[in-house]
Image (cartoon, rainbow, N blue to C red; front, side, top):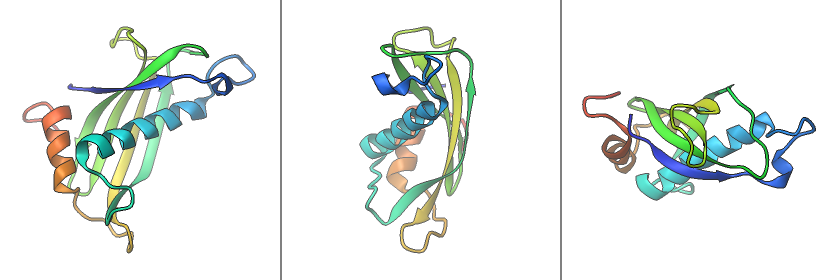
Length: 141
């Protein structure tokens, strides 16, 4: 599966009392990565007429990390629907083995009219970018 990579440098305050990155930080990193990708590559305007709302998320933790490690979010697409997009996300050690993610995440965004909050089709620019950059030919559509 094609993947984009977004840096995820850890901060001092990301560690919890157990000396590893708190679970909430992984969700922040995944949310930041997919939104940064949609804005940079898919033309999504957070103040525009169509916005993406997270309706489901999950994370499976496989190994610990702690500051000052540098991590990255590998962004892929599990399912590209008419009004929704499910991201397949891997948290990796920066420059590490892609076959050994330290966490596996999933976010589902439903795209809605910013005013009515009713579902609308994915913006064409976003669908085109996802299809061109993150979906295998003949993939998730």
